[in-house]
Amino acid sequence: MTVRRVLVLQGPNLDLLGQREPERYGAGTLAELTARLDGLAAELGVSLEHFQSAHEGALVERVHQAARDGVDAAIVNAAAYTHTSIALRDAFLGTGLPFVEVHLSNVHAREPFRHGSLLADVAVGVIVGLKAEGYLLALRALAGAA
Ligand code: DQA
Image (cartoon, rainbow, N blue to C red):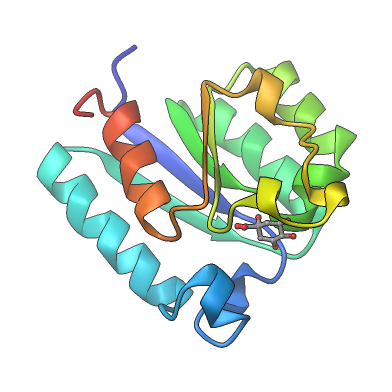
């Protein structure tokens, strides 16, 4: 799979990065994470599109749009919707858009309701617990440079 265009899809409350439980999610803001990803993407020759929303339907529609636009793959932190959203799962199944699932925190070391993911078994791969580094690793993996 040649990956040239990647959607970075961020779910609810990820706009609060930097102020939100920094010991768990890291001290960097979403803008800083976006800038780090854009820097790496430029090195790898990949073009990134970023989208963050607290709205499940907006995330679903953004997946549809990406598939229509010919985006090759996605890096997805669906945040709390990871554990609940059949609609987002169906969006990836319905479009066939390949994606890597990322979580900043180690969800498996947290409350039992965070251990399940409705996305993980349809993802190309899953990276958890490495804070912002997980997104960068996902991008390298999708670009074939891991
Ligand atoms: C998260 C983990 C989810 O359980 C939580 O609801 C989030 C962030 C993470 O990146 O660690 O909002 O996806």
